[in-house]
Length: 80
Image 1: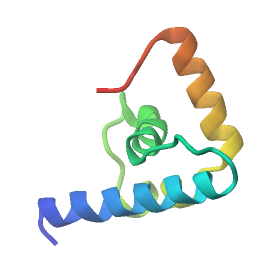
Image 2 (image 1 turned 60 degrees about the vertical axis):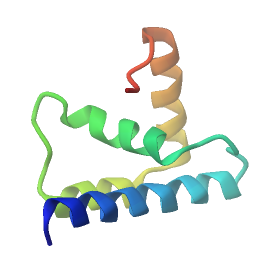
Image 3 (image 1 turned 180 degrees about the vertical axis):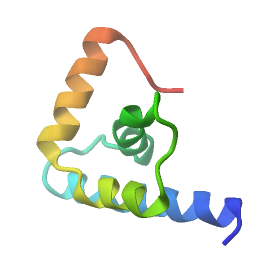
Image 4 (image 1 turned 90 degrees about the vertical axis):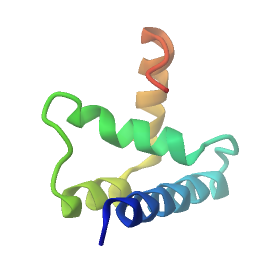
């Protein structure tokens, strides 16, 4: 798997998790929101092994996501 394919796979996974959140009432969640929430904990450590990153995306819960979004709103945007 090359870098581009890996990026596409992660984007697809983030889109899937965003869709899951939209189905339970969070209509405005995007794949970028999911990525920012998951990747923020790796800012100092660097990107983890792929299996850890995938596991973090798959196991992301609404409450964790909402806490991240609330903290981001207070601190200012971490989005690109």
